[in-house]
Length: 421
Image (cartoon, rainbow, N blue to C red; front, side, top):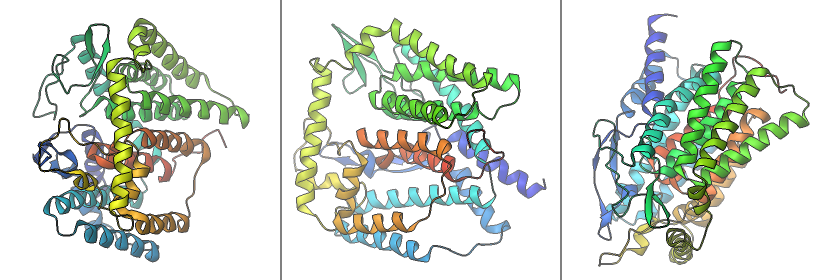
């Protein structure tokens, strides 16, 4: 490996290590009297090595021709539609500009890794290791019932006694949900769910005992932290992906190694121990008669009703990505922050309208994907479930980063043939 490859390897690995951390410089924006994250321009720490990796490829690798010109034209049309949809509103322009900038940056970084033939296994191992500190941090936060503020780590103070903090209510007390280094427990849970599915895939390719032991212990930490996020969508996403993975291998009559069973048993036992010890809190997440659960359901129903109102305002071209809430803004401060619909599929239609949605469907149909079923489908299923019940994969930088990771798992080449066939 020459010095150029070493520099590139160091930069893309550093990018993946920094992706989960939310250290950033940002320029706050308010909407209806509340902070508006979707319209906030942020310079995230992980962008620096990411940009360096992209630039390094452009300088030292021969450029490749665009092989999907028609699809590129379709994306350009979507961009023009979103610019047109802003109608010159400065807040809308700010929201869509950061969305497009971050999507372009993440797509370019993914392209850089594919350009250098970085393998799935390399990305999977780093992704798994990056989640270990967050799992430990989340467990500590739950035990301490406090999230300490850190500008360097990109974490805000979270105290369960304060309003606006994500908690589980049980009886007369409020229990802090685990945040890790993420802005919300649901986002943390989504990363952990994908991380656990990733660990199951890695257990199929490890050949050394120390790697299997590390996977087993690390998976146990991730599973414990996942339970403590109390993120129902993440629980469902991992559960369905896990069942699919096992079922597919049984149907294909594939054999399971002792390393796989070690990781699998570690996940099941750690999840069972934490769930049983915290069963009253876990059950409270499914009791719709409690105050917080009623409020959660009410907010989601209201956001879907608002989606219908917004769609009727601009059915053809939408509002532009991340600018849909501007259609609900009033001159007075609202009692609570405005929330987009908690599903990315509705958000896409609101942001690009019917015309943009049809163009996007055309782009997807025209693309020819090569999937390795047992590798990709658990991640795709989990991604669909996360997108069906929450919006962060579309709305937030940390969610778009997770979506990029899932795409890398699907499309990067493999170092060796897995056993599942």
